[in-house]
Image (cartoon, rainbow, N blue to C red; front, side, top):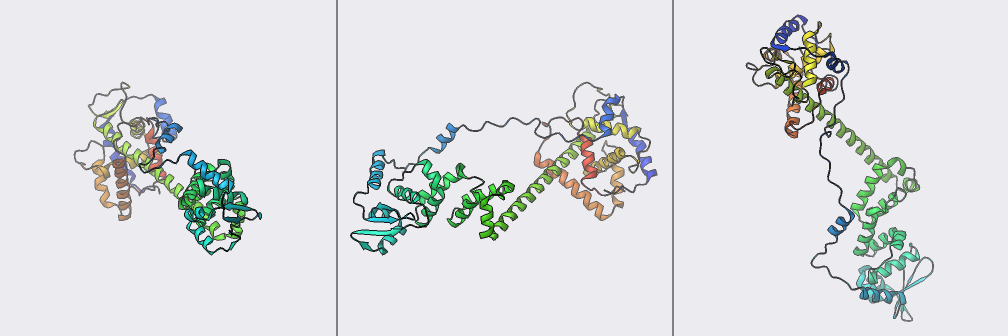
Length: 424
């Protein structure tokens, strides 16, 4: 904000009725100097906030998700064991599945055809030799093929084996259309098996295997841990094979960082607007009712007895006291008086009753507005609308914690950060 071009004689003449309209009592210098020397950082809005509720325990979480739907069918353990043994023993098998290690996995064509429509089509096109059908599942380890076929029989698997072959099983379940196995793989990856070393591989598989939620989780993890993930072998391999994906992830990181900065900027602005509204309330409180050692003429002051319900009152009281005793008082000559002039003008723009208003100079600033340029007038209107909108969004401030020196921080932000129009 540029230094306001103000008629010094006019402001000096206006400051006299301001001082005469207020009864400024004695105050200890120790209460004044710290506030005037440097702005005090804004106290956190959460200083008086209640403690958040505890996180749900593992037992509660399990209980919540263990509720079974009405159509859920419980398969006895004996039945699962019977199907599991049928696969392991290979009794009556009529299919031989060849793997990369030139090993063979025995299976039954009826079981495979019922479990997977893709395998049914493969078996239909396969040739029969000595009563045995031969098919190939290339590209994955032998152990992964065994787990895959076993799951088709009994839906059984070992946790350690699943973790070892989860990526291969995800590909197999998608290619051969086994939704139940695909859900198991996706759920396992989402609930803790994602690491910084494998997240890039999982992301590419998730996109190829039509797992959008898993892909979203991977992208979010890359954005959060970009520095470390960009140094992994998976990232380097992805850069060589799929540079378009690398560019997309980098853009996601930049976009997330931009959103974060914009969110922080809006939060800081919101704090400033809240502080300004508290300052307006405290100013009206001081000029109308009086507070502690300062108030309107003829008002009995309370001194140091009792605590004020307005958080900005003490800081504003100190600023008013300085303004009434300052020899310079012109906005261009004293930074504290400059802030006081700005607060007075902001009040006049928010006040709807200038004729009966108890705040000094309110009507004078109303008259002075008519001489301002349209550009400055627009800026002031935007500021006033944002202060009022922020107040309405947050609600009442009566339960907020009391910050006795909040007004100096408000004036500092008000002058240096918001780029207010000139006061003419």
